[in-house]
Amino acid sequence: NTSLELQPLMDILVDPNERQGYAWIRMRISRMWSRWTDAAKSLMSKYSFRNRPKKKILVHLGLLSKQSGWKFAEMQFKGGPLGELVQWSDLISTLYILGHDLTVTSEVEQLLEILNHVPAARTPCQSRKELPVQIIYTDIMGLIQFKKRLKAGYAKFSCLFRVLDSFGTEPAFNHRMFAKQNKILTSWGGQDLNLQQFYTMFPHSPDNSFMGFVVDRILNDTEKSSEPKRDIALVYGKNDYMWEGKRSYLDAIHARFEVHGTVYKDANKKLVNVPNYVVNHGILSGLDLHELLQKTKVFVGLGFPYEGPAPLEAIANGAVFLNPQFSPPHSSKNTKFFKGKPTQREITSQHPYAEVFIGKPYVYTIHVNNMTEVDQALDAIVQQTNFSSYVPYEYTEEGMLQRMNAYIENQNFCLHQEYRGRKWPPAESVTNIIGEAGKSCRDACWDIRKICEPGHFAELNTEQAFANLTSCSSHTKSSNIYYPAVEVSKMACTRQLEPKLFSCVGSMHALRRLCPCRDFIPGQTALCVGCD
Ligand code: UDP
Image (tube, rainbow, N blue to C red; front, side, top):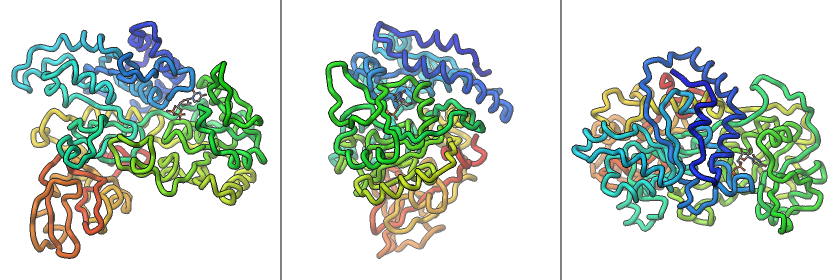
């Protein structure tokens, strides 16, 4: 019960209008199709994929809609952001291959047509059974469109949503009342969903579900490139403004390498920040870009865009990624880009995943304004003779199919925990700990190489659970992202009053947090051992 034929999927991806919104997505899916089918066959040889009910799934790409005003459709071949389209392409491939019944929409009128088939609400449970779909993947823009059109009917749909949210949403911003009281409510936050309904691009906030994408490459994982490496540095920056103020860094690279770029150039505008010595190819097709990466020794980060797919593609093609370090870290406190985003996450480099999960010899994280550091890194790369490639399993087609299948089969946001029967991930995969003072559960769990598992906070939120881990001089309850926790000076224990505020990222200096930490499959951080 998987679907491996490409044409029926292309028939689903017919553009609703002349804007050709799906053009880039169709190209990516077609180019990668043989890898997808190989991955599905490989996965099927390891697991029984039978007895999975076929689900009706709606995928609504709010970012492509005319109403969004974002011009993603218009800009897809003109230097516009592509990371989101990468994610949507791979999600659509995944759902289709897993054999589900897929509808894809990107305009509000199409949405209305589907929603018009919704029967009138009776009890929430009864009416949900009759809904035209069982899962809805969308983005924040799409969610806002749904809310507007469904009005009172939204409530019975809300548990069906999975919201693609690259940078993640933290509990304090998701809980509308709490965000309002703390003056952090923005147009992206306040959605009041289950935190695991937000699907991120990197496994950075365990409060959310990690969806990811697939790292595109032209070689098979075991193949060696037939294309020899040349002394080429390819700069990661599609738009002229990204190159501003980086001249000395670029000159140091130019002293050792032939510098290439893929910068979008408007016919009547000059590139003012790109040095003349740069061989500019303009925006390349996926295949041409990968051929260039095959010959490239170093892929040069400029500090922006944050957390894109391209550095992982470069590493997959055997190029070293120069990753600009940020001190102080960038966050909504000091960086315009993050203002209004529903997260307080602080990022320590352009690509924290590459920095933390990959590292040397594939990634050099350096201060690009410190020329001694830059020279040292470049000299090390110049001397390197072997450029091997690397793709983390969770970013392969097989890894994504495995992870998404586990989510589809096990996540259920429509039933209360106690009615779900078997809890997922199961209790056996979780170890309860008490963290060091001032540490979040994300960090406390990671210290013992485990992942904070927010679905299991409830079991820790009892007097008995406190007694198992510490001794309390008093017990209280409070609604804030720091609890359950123990205050170290008085040993005062505080439980969580509002389950929607259970948080992996909350931390305060005098508090030791009680944390549920789960194990994971090596290379597949989203899944516990035995949870595939
Ligand atoms: N890309 C491309 N042609 C180019 C430059 C980039 O097809 O000339 C692709 C790249 O392979 C990657 C995607 O664009 O899959 C997104 O790249 P990036 O990391 O720059 O993220 P963005 O800022 O676009 O979200």
